[in-house]
Length: 295
Length: 295
Image 1: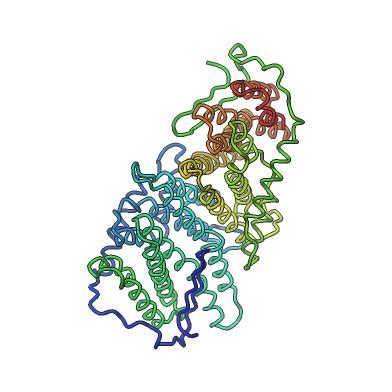
Image 2: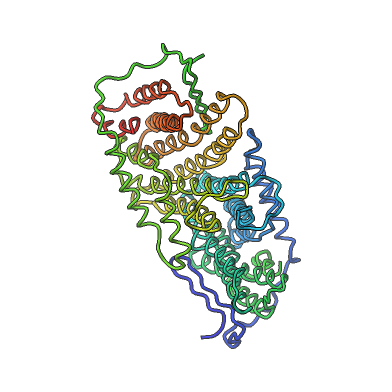
């Protein structure tokens, strides 16, 4: 079977193979009449809200050398849309923004911790400039991961009986960040960088890395938002797939920017698949969430 | 006021000052008739059980390069009694061993992750031999932290209605491992190592590190065990203090072994304080848990 193949099993394990010989007859037609918000406006405003919420949550106290770097390292990481997609998914299933704010903040923290650790001056890496010493960056990264789970665990809302949903979100995020998700993706990235084979072999590793990092993280963000907003199991899975396509699109665009042969044709096909997922929702409801495929 | 001072506030923030001019009149007398198990037998058997449970929980699958190091790094870390103290605390309040097994496994994972990251070959550290490359050790450590939280979150027991207790344990462990606990302690350790002042100044930093690492981790382990075993709030706080003393004793003995002036007199006083905490429990119940101050 050609085309974009998506396997999802009970373990939330994705395999997505982007091949250039996609079987177009199987692709959905692009739904007409979807009114996009200006691409970045929803994302930018929600993102600002998440950052503000996180700034308030990260304590600033003595010893400053322990607490200050966390603030700095969160802002130093490159932008990601996974946290704001989590909020959008919560809203699209009828939830309130505050119900997903802790999960969105945790995702932002984890993303920043991953970036910090990826750029740590290990002895086998080229030396680059850092604001803080290696010790501080390593330990602050660890602290950020732990703090993300703390934020999530204490987001129980009185009278909402949401403990089980929060525990489910903790499982989702720990799996996405762990050895079956981001950690595996980082390993693929290393293999891609070190690959001495053909260009296509290197690009294949990079695509696998995108699946496991950007794809998995956005799938997780969207699914968690839907869970916290009270979405049905069907809505959660639809939004998980939508999130996965969003992450793949963004990773592929990044490859393209770096002249790494991310194919714009594949991106267009991923956009179609993503929009197809949103068809079950009323069109006025998807205005905000659909902007993510155009960020 | 002289003596060992222990402040506990709502933030689970400890300050323990071990001074040699302890005011002996304030110390409790050593309770008579406490029958100890042979010091290491309970700990060793429970620890073996926790390790076996963790070995089963850590998946071994492709890519092996991602999953194998986790097994190795868990066994490579030096032994710690915090996980088995968690089990003992659960049992002393009348709980079953399996109720605290996920929390004990998570504590063991987090301890191993901390040890792995502390020994990472950063560019500002002396080069030492490692089984895996720096990338693998860094990322596996991150994966271990995430996996610890996953284990905890999925330890909901059907019909036990224990979600809220598990969320509370997640908060406890994330705080103990985070910037207010182990991370802060590691910073104190660095200050102690780099300290150019007097010997006593260096020892003060090392003691602060012990409070925040061994003290905090054992306090957390014992409190979490009590929570999961269904202990009352009073029992949880008693066992938290007991755990703190256990951690302090072990840290001080370690200092002593390294000829770092850990005072055996202080250790004896900590043992007395620890035993005093156990007086509320029936003496037959404390046989197992009291062995931790003699490990």
